[in-house]
Length: 311
Image (cartoon, rainbow, N blue to C red; front, side, top):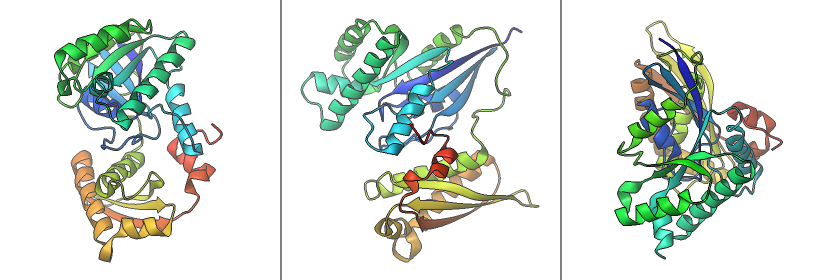
C-alpha cells in the first residue's frame, strides 16, 4: 500500500461551520462547536483517514477584522496555517450570503460576507487558490445556491466548488474524496487511530470551554478561558482533572459560578459526561472560577493556546 498524506487548511469567517466540517470529516468530535462566533481560538488538527490517505485538517480560528491582541493572534494563527498546506478549503456560509444578496440579511450576515471577501482578496494577493466549500446549503433555495456558486467561481480564486451541509453530512464525502485525490505520496503524520493532535489536557479544557459558552450564551463575553491545571491517572482506571475558568471581571466570576454554585456545577456535569464518553472511562472533574483581569494580555496564556503574543 502506497501511503499518501495531505495537510488541509480549513479557512473561513467566524461561524461559517469550519469546526463542524472538521468533525464531520474526521467522523468524531475533535473541535468544539457553539452558535457563537470566534469559538475556535487556535488551530487544531483533526485527522481523517480515507483508505491509504491521511488527511490532516487544520481547523483555524475565524478570519475577521481584529481589534484586540487576542483577535490579532487568532487571525495570525489562521493565516499561518496556510504555510505548508497541500490544499486550502475556504468555507463560506452560503445561507448568509443568499440572505445578503436578497436584501434580507442581518448585520451578522453582512459581516460574515465582508470577512469572506477579505479572505478572497488576501488569497488572490498571495497568489493562492482554494477549494470553495459552500456550507449550510440545506438552509437556502437551490436557485440561489447555483447563482452564488457561479458568482464566486468567477472570482478567480477557486479551483473547485463543493456544496455541503456540514451539520447533516450532505456532500461532505464528495469533498473528502476530492481532498484525498490531492494528497501527495508520503508517510502519515499521525498513527492511523489518532483523530487529533492536541494533548488530552487541551482537549479537556476545550470541552469545558464549549459547555461554558453554551450555558452562558451572551452573559459572558469572550474574555474567558479554561486551563487544565492537573491531570491525575488513578489506580482504578479513572482520571481526576482539575481545571480553572479564568474571567476578566468580578461580575463575570459571579455569573460563571451562579447562585449557590449551580451554574459552574451544571457546566462541570456537562463537560464530565462528554469527557467520559470521549475517554471511555470515569472522569472526576473539578472546576474553579478565578478572576484574572488581564489574562488576555499575559504572554503565558498565549503560549498555552499556541498563539503568537506579538501578532
